[in-house]
Image (cartoon, rainbow, N blue to C red):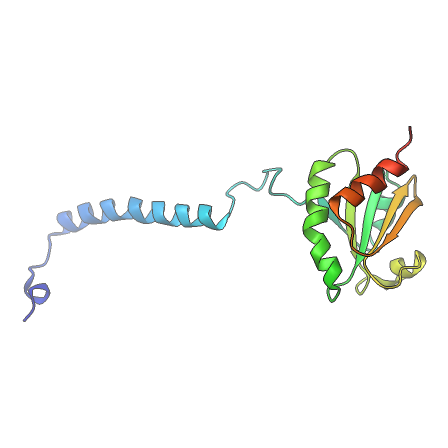
Amino acid sequence: MSRRQLRTPQSPARQAKHNRRAVPGLAWAFLSTLLVLGVSCSQSDPERTSAVLELSEANFQHEVLESMQPVLVEFWAPWCQPCLEMKPVLKEFATEQHGRIKIGTLNIDDHPRVADAFDVGAPPVLLLFHDGNVAKRRVGFRSKAELEHMLALSSPP
């Protein structure tokens, strides 16, 4: 027989003491794993919340056409590779421009009537709205520098 099988059972008090030592170690391991994976415990952290609005037929009128701020809208589709490549660019741009401009995305497959209303064909299409009207229109992938340039050209002096 092995030593493990011959070991005498521990008293309940000794088992409880052993378990108290193990639990904090397990909790620490769990929390450190969450931190490594980038999971946030706070939902109100502004850095973790998305600065890019998800637009739809239901909220387009209010969020874009009635907005007091300029609004940059990307018309995209899930099958469009340049659209997918623009997601992190838009997110970074939205974070940097927070409070100065609204940025939103509209899936043309889910909301074709809005896309048709603005004559959106092949995505990605970027429309910059000022006072409910289209001020600038760009088709295709745009870098962050190009987005900044687009915004600067359309800003009032």
